[in-house]
Image (cartoon, rainbow, N blue to C red; front, top):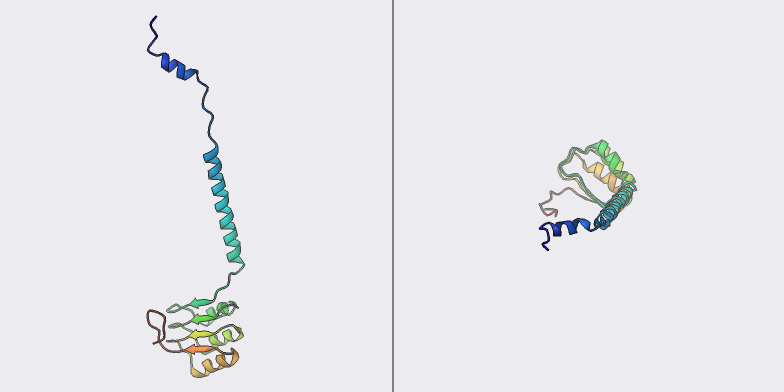
Length: 139
């Protein structure tokens, strides 16, 4: 007896369908949830105000009004204000920053009296008027 040529195809159709594998979908869901949790946690931490120790505003348009916002950064220790529009009136807004250790003011309109007033208000504050080189070291 001759078997039809389509017998192997007929046998393949008789098998029950293979169950779908949900592992890749579950893995994708797990990774997605992990990613979303990580982003959510990171945003929460950012909004809680992670400590900022250094701030460089070199060559920006920061002026006296901008220092009002800078003065709120209570953990700031180093501030670089080179080539900005800061004046004596604005720099006095930093007087309440007791943790400030270093301020660089090359190329600003600050006078010696404004600088000395700030140094009297903030203990052990180092103020640099010297221009800085590309590595950030005073020339």
